[in-house]
Length: 407
Figure (cartoon, one colour):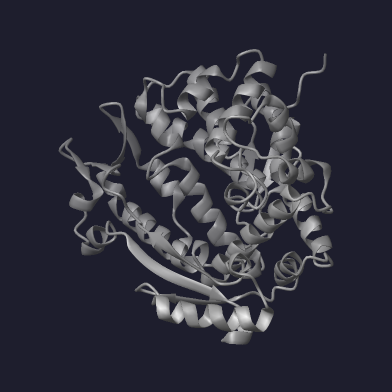
């Protein structure tokens, strides 16, 4: 049997990334993981930032690379991390997003109900563990936060985890939004472990401040950009409408995988191994090719919504700091209903409101600064910058979407 060569990949952000061992190589080669090449990292953000076409595959490989670096840094500071733990942490971060559906979050809100992508990630990991004869057991423990060494779990999921260190830098690079360009190298170099917790040495305090501010700016400028919000909302509505038509037995063009999810009610309870297998064949290409075809569908609601996405002719969106008055919303609804002869329940596909929340820093799960005197302090208290305190407050904004002809 041929052993896999340890490959080197070229990443536009970190340069050369080496795959550390054959287990990780085999996981990357697996069809479940290769599917991530066909799932974009940022959904429909490329309608706002044309360069944002990078994939979940890209991000996962970058995370694995940063995890290797973080563990090397900790080992150099006399934190004992065994080879088995290193591999497990790399596998856990590599697979942390494997359960994301096509266009990331849109699927979770429309055709797969009541099961979050983290739970699907876990199902994929368990299936791979079976296939790899238990070699992923420790990685699963770390991923679930159940491993007794807390800092390894925090590297996967915390307010300063490897996932965030990669996606902020990567998304900033591909969107061209310079504000998100954090120094992940510097932050990793400042990592240490105290009382089994992941901490940042005092010298890294300004890098942490910049990281928190960068996160806030990236949320307002990129992840919660109003055009991105309206595009994602329309995508959710397209899939909801398709699902509704499918439940009435209407024939819809769709790939085999997409058809399965449109014509069956999928929830946490009936998400079987077969469902997982079908989910592993579903990606952005299925959804986009279906939406292209649906622009010609005889159902005017489906074809209208599909055309908006394909031609990037989206609904108008208003964003403000206070809720929209009922009176104002009713006025728009009446106009749209009259002009387009829509029933009450059809109206919500074209006129809807919602809220967005941005909390750059949450004190419930603090980023801990390790002072020169060996004390542990929450960054919000350790920072001499007033703005870290300010950033702990969630900011809520309200948006309303409706057809442009009524603007």
